[in-house]
Structure formats: structure tokens, C-alpha cells
Length: 451
Image (cartoon, rainbow, N blue to C red; front, side):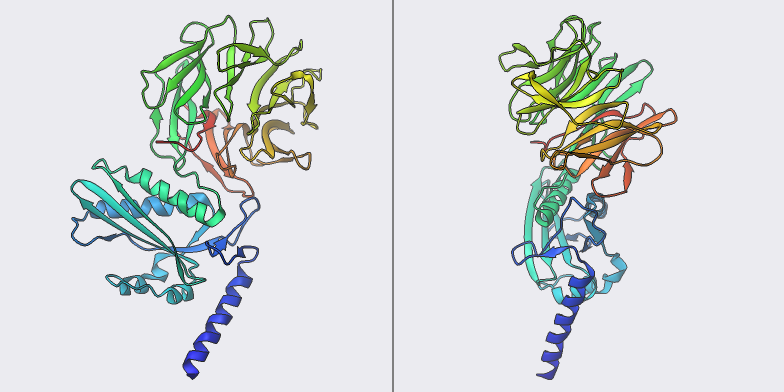
């Protein structure tokens, strides 16, 4: 009896210490047992232990596949920036002890410092790969989440692991992760620029276009099936759309004289916002579902770089209508255009461009001249204030939001090198995403992809 009481007191004291040490992470009674706030810097991320993938009974094994799956999962958790992974040598003995056993001693895992425990099994049956994941909360000592996946002999291992990693982030934060998303970008070869796509973790780079010309400003459709961009393949800056699943499906949407540029796809329907210069000036239009054009801006100065609000009711854009050749960021009504008035949101900078509206609708990221460099600023539509997001050496431009609103991708120019970088809100960590000799510019983050 005395030993039982001591163990109860020990658990109580241990939990009290853990709760104190990880503040401001909040614990709730409902699943998950641990949930964190993504919008602020979080140093005490959730401590997680990930055991090696074990082979299912009756299955042929593959050591290479097992190690690769383990590597991908751990890397996805690292890149999410919400988990602190415990070193395997800390729990090696406990992991070996539980091999082949049905039970899991969650209290023992908790004593080793883990708040979450992930166990996974794999097997190959009739040419198909089967993966089973189990997530445990050692704080409340309960099973949280189980997932099982089965894929063809092509395996699609990386995609399956990405999907599970996104489920883990959803379980922890209430928002799906972005490991399964992609970023489109431009890469230069001699005088041509082609569109490529790359996974969030920097793998699986693919060439999307083969136009052998100058391509500009790729943008994703809301479903992620289509990429729309400006192409000079027809000896004019035309608006072109290409099917991501079938590259032979390439359509020219607009072939008007002058610019057909800076497309932005409405997040709520099939309308497109774009810039046309057919009126001998750069003006913003909407291409309606019936393919009719509706003009939004009527100003003798340049208007460009439109971006939709998530509800499709507002459009932010760049204009030098304030005079003195100093472009600023404005917001207008998507129905009335600038006839309904415009709201200027950028100040204290002589050059601002590339607005990008956040998926949550409460922020707009944009390029701004700060001192002698270009940096990414973020305007908060609630507080009406802008803050400098990027602060490192080099020019940062062309921001693009991840679909969960946690990360920004942007072009980073240092010297003559231009590559795409990624940074999470509330974090000072910066990660280079593209490394090709042709560079990586004009990043466009995909929505959550259907396939």
C-alpha cells in the first residue's frame, strides 16, 4: 500500500513539474491532451518519441523501406516546428523491451520525458504496402489516434508519411499540417524560365512547363489541379493554364494585346483577378465565370499585383496612385472596385509590392523597402499595424502563404543568387527550399491537394 501511495505521489509531482516547465503550452481534458498556440513563438514544443517502424506478422520485410519511412516521418515532424523529438538513445532500452508486446507502459515513456509517443508498423502484402500508426498521450496515459494506410506497389511512401504527419499537427493544433503540400516556383535556364513544383520538405522537384520561353507568376487553382501563369510562348504575355495531372492539357485563357499578367484565383469560385494593359495602362480586372471581363480600377497610375481575401469580397493590390513613384498597398471591394474607395495599408516605406492575403483573412504579407533592403512585412487587419517579418541580410520579396497560414515562402536574393526560402510565423528559423542553379523565384504555395 505504501509503495502504491508513493507511486501516486510521484506521478502527481512529475506532472506538476512538467506542466510548470512547458508553460505556455496549455493542456485540455479533451483530445488531444496537449495543444499549443501556433501564432506565437513556442520554445517548449511538444516532446515526442518516435520508435522504429516494426514489421507486421506474416509480412516480408524491407530494411531500406523501414529506415526510409522512419527518416521521412522524423523530418516532417522537425519541419513542422511544433515538436521536440527525444533522442532515440534515451528510450532505446524501453523500445526494445516493448518489441513484440501488446501493452505500452505510458508512464515509463513519460518518465523518460516524452509527452507523445508514436509507434508504427509496416507490411507488404500482395504487392501493397500497409502502414499502421498509433499515437499515445503519455501525460493523460491514453491512446489518442490510430491511422492505417494501404497503397499500391508503387508505394507512394513519402506521400503517406506526409499525410500522417499532417494528421499529427491537426491533432496537436487543430489545424492540418502542410507536409503534403507543394510550392510552385520559377527557375531560369539561359533566357527561359520554366515552372517547377517541389514538396514542402524540399524533395520531389518536378518540371511543370516546357514552354522554352519566359514564364511569370504561377498561381494555383483552389483545388490544386491547375496552375495559371503568364507565358510569352505566343510572342505576347498571354494568360495560360496547365493541368498539373496532365501537362498536355495546356490552355490559353487570354491573348489580348499587351499584358495578361499577375493572375490571382478566387478562393471561393472560378473567377480570376488579373492585370491587363489593353487600355494603355496597367489596370486590374476580374475574369468572370462566363469569361467576361469586369474592370476594377480606373486610375492613370499603375495598378497591379492583386490578391483576394479568403471570403472573395475584398482585393488587395499595389498602386503608385499616391504619387512620387512610390508604390503602396491598397484594399478595395471586389464588386465595386476602386469606385467604392480604396484603403491604403502600407506606410513608412518608399516601395511596397506583392501583397498576399493570409488564409485566415486577418493578415496581408507584402514586400517593403526597409533601409537599403527589401524585407517581408505583415499587416494585421485587426490592429492596423505592419511589422517586419524577415530581418536577415539579403533582399526578401514575393511572399506566399501556406494554406494553414503558419508559414511564408518568399524569394531570397543574396548577391546574384535567388532562391525560395520558408519561415514560420513567430519563429526566427529560416529554411532554404530550392537549390537549383536556375534559382527559385515567384514561389506560389499550393492549397491542400486532392491527389
